[in-house]
Image (cartoon, rainbow, N blue to C red):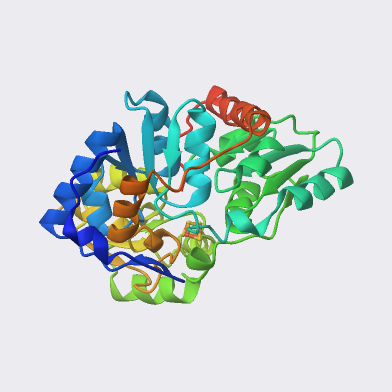
Length: 343
Ligand code: SF4
C-alpha cells in the first residue's frame, strides 16, 4: 500500500510487554484515521481499552456488541482493539472480512483457563450434558459448545435447558455460581476458571468501600470475585438491595444513564470508568479496586494500533469448520433472546 510516512511511526519499539514508543498525540490520531481510511477499516474498541484508544475508535462497547457491529459494518476490514478471543468472535461472525488485532499477544487469563482438549475430556465424562460457554472462550472451545452465553443472559440460557439434562458451565466460576444460585439447578457443573483481574476485586474491599460510601450505588460485574459478596451484603441487609446492580459492561452504561445516585462504586476493570464518566458526567464514578487493570487489554497501545494499520497485522484466522460450529453456538444463544452484552 502507498502511504506518506509519518515520522512518528519510526519510533515504534517491540518489547515483551507489547509495542511502545508512540504517544497518543493529535498527529498520531490524524495518522491513525488516515491509515484506517486507506485500508477501508473500521476501528472497534472494548470498554477496557486505554482512553486514547477508546477515543479514536469508531465504536466502543462490550465484546458481543462489537462483534455484531463488525458483522454489519460496510468496511471490509475490522480492527479489533481488545483481546484475542474477542477478535476471534468478530471473525466467527464475519468470516469473509479481514479482522486485525493490533497485538495478537493480547490474551485473556479467563479464556486461557480451559483448552479445547480439556473441554473434550470434560465432555467425555458427561456425554449427555449440555455445554454452556461464556463468550470469554477461544474459537476452538466455542466450536465444542452447545450454547454460548453472556453475563446478561447466562441465567436465561441455562434456564432454557431441559431441567433433567446435566449442564457443563465454563469457564468462569463466579458467573457459574451466580447462575447456579439464580436457577436453583443442582445438575450444573462449573469449571473452576477465573479472570485474575476480576478475581482480585474481593468482597472485603467491596464491603469496606460500601461502608465508607453508604449512599453510592454498586455496579458489579458478575465475573468479579466480589459479585457473590455483593449479593450476600444485599441479602443480609448490609447494603440496600436496590443499590447493588450485577451488570455486564454494556449494562453498566445503560444503568449509569438511569441511576439517580450521585456516586457509583464500580467493580470491574478500570478502563470501564472512561465510558461511564462520558455517559454520565454528573456522577462521581469510583473504582472498588483502582489496581484492577487488565495487562492484556493495555497491550493495545497507540504504537500497536499504528503498526497494525501500517502493516495490516496481526490478522486473525479461524478455520472454517471451527468458525461454522462456533457460530452455531452463538446463534443458539441469540435465538434464546436477550443476548445483552459480553464482557
Ligand atoms: S479483564 Fe480478565 S476476562 Fe477480561 S480480558 Fe482481561 S484477563 Fe480476560
